[in-house]
Length: 413
Image 1 (tube, rainbow, N blue to C red):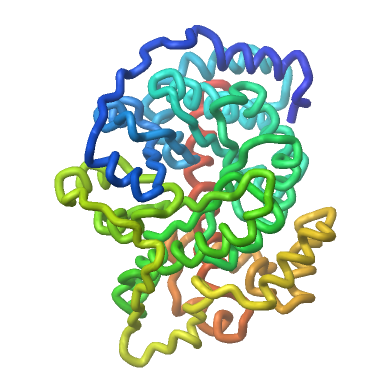
Image 2: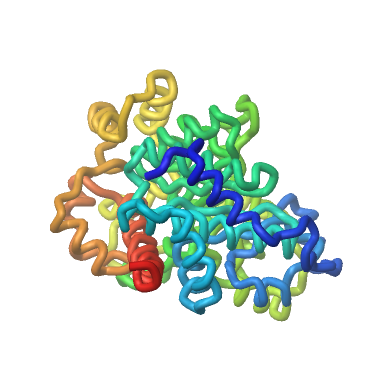
């Protein structure tokens, strides 16, 4: 990778910013009383899309940001709209090995698309690191800083939940760079992240939690994600109350309009465009804060919540809090050290060391792992549902990143 202060890095930054005036094409956002009522409960509204045209149809004055990821960016790049830009970036990087060129072109594509979103909508934009950097501390720091240098007032750097990502996000925050920590699925994961990395935002991908139960016939999945999200917000607010900037909770992976109503009052929603449309036509708009709700959870006949570790999605044990405190007071030098500390303090299922074969199975199963394959490891405390979904999510993003990289290679190799 290239160093952030080199002439090449500066040239890529200039390319990302080229031909973008400060107010080019800025959308005149209408006010919408429906979304104003949701804002009145305390919730901020972000659009979960990279499609500029689709976002423009739905954007209102009450919306404050957009978030992209490897999957959403890949959809835009595969349309061919950036092919000429890729060729220009390749010229800037001439002489570098192919792999390094692909990594940096993927980076500058992400930045360029993020800038176009900023120019069109004027809000904040979350931009995501390349998946190859998930376990690369130096890479997280370099590219996180380079994103920030391109748009310090608008970009929020998305760092994925890995042991290394935890340390990388902490260092980015120490440098004053806004961080949206992503791919979390439980209150306990966000307790660790909040205490150690101190990011601006944490997530619960709540839609996938419900799908894990329903797809695996462990229950209907109703309110599982909502319960985990509300619990996470409580612990996040408590742990970050004394931070320089308190961490805010995002309800991500919203699958239905009903989930917006059920979670009114959480700090932030990231809502896909299809769900925005359904909410606008299907909900009354009479929102009231649901932060005090205790949603009931049911499982299928013969399924034990304890045996599948379901409570770990919303409960934060003393062991988890001890791990969070230990990692915050004495952060290890590497992700390997984070995983070792977790094992020492009885939280081995949070940062497991999976075999290549197990990782291959997870990647093949998609975003929702097959519970039957992992049930015994979960019962033994070696894995947990939140960890499985985190690893599966990263594998899914990696596949989409590979498709994006493939288009780049096809144009420059």
